[in-house]
Image 1 (cartoon, rainbow, N blue to C red):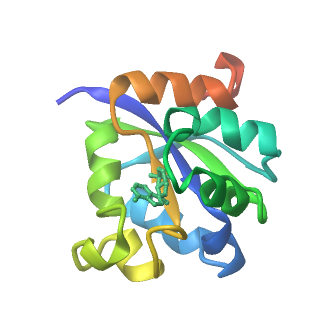
Image 2: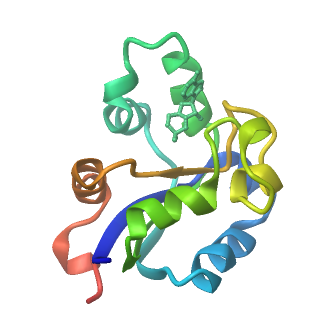
Length: 140
Ligand code: CMP
């Protein structure tokens, strides 16, 4: 086990449902610590840049429209094996395939509006954290 940092986004659907606290509670009660956090309304350029790896996919336009449809909470989570732990807590991308008890199974209805994003590797975590935060904004 190693201490890692990972990027999480609480997406517009979850912010609209007023469940930011319930999602943070899942992270905190499972050993992840918030190392940085801010609420923001992404611009189209930010959403397109963040999800650039998906730009050839058929769902890219809908994904960007959804991600700019309302404010999000971007946060850095830290802890033992934080990248994998966060992905386990989120559950499968499609909430219908997510395990019971996971965030997406409990709080999301569709693959398009799936409540949370989490980095999928240490390389993406590094890129995604730097996309939203500078070093001075991270604690410990
Ligand atoms: P996220 O983990 O934020 O990464 C990309 C997002 O694209 C994903 O969550 C989904 O919300 C969205 N998406 C929509 N359709 C698909 C699909 N077929 N496969 C993967 N992601 C999809």
